[in-house]
Amino acid sequence: MMEKMIFGRFIPGDSFVHRMDPRAKILFVFLFIAIVFVANNTLTYLLLLAFTFFVVFLSKIRLYFLVNGLKPVFILLIFTFMLHIFFTKGGDLLFSFGFVEVYEEGLRQGIFISIRFLVLVFITSILTLTTSPISITDGIEVLLGPFKRIKLPVHELALMMSISLRFIPTLMDETGKILKAQMARGSDIGSGPLKKRIKAVVPLLIPLFVSAFKRAEDLATAMEVRGYRGGEGRTRYRQLDWRMRDTLSLLMLVGLTAVLWYFRT
Image 1: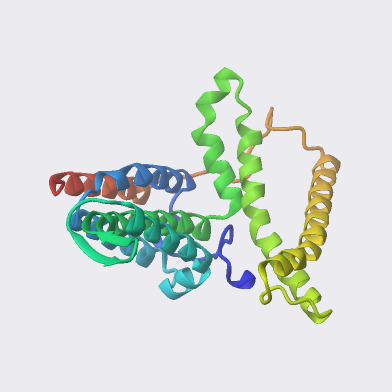
Image 2: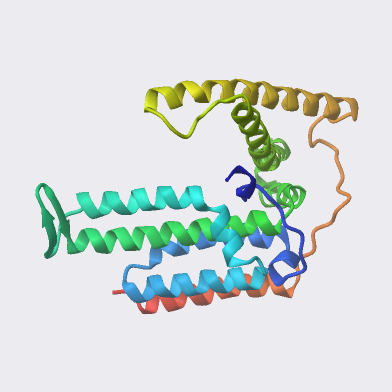
């Protein structure tokens, strides 16, 4: 499962989404997060789903690959759905078994919140899968540029976000290697009582933390040796280029917002 995780991974490609300016993609994601809350009925949520799958199609990222890499997220999705099913009351009673009661409003809210969570995860995953960490850093730094006037360390914040994204797949790969090494030594994490499984996780966490701190120290040393002193006075080798496709992508969000608002109840 660790090897299939897609958080923070970048897949090079030449799709419409890959060629978009990173600033446009970042703006697209943040605007989409706000637009999601416009939907409030079955039709609008179906439109959101259709739009999300259309974006996945434009990115040329296989849906199977995306779903397979987000399996841990679907566990949280199911948990959220069940919470709404069992604890949200309202409407007609659909099912009753002992103290468990399922109401129409609980089912409705469970489905809607799950769809909202699903489309947000898909869109944000498309951002990281189609944009290199360096491009994300450049895009965030440019978008936050106006805040430099109030002494906000924009470059440092963007760099920290980029490094965090880059380290996610690295740590996942490291976790997989440590897990295999522990299993080769006879450790069994996936079975037995809960107390035993928690104890078995400790030999996995300690070397993972040691490795993470060592990687962080090596990265800091490498940056210091290369003369890194923050963003003051730095120039860019890569120049961002806003084109018509970037404007069109944001106009698509405007159109989506208008359609969702029209069909709101």
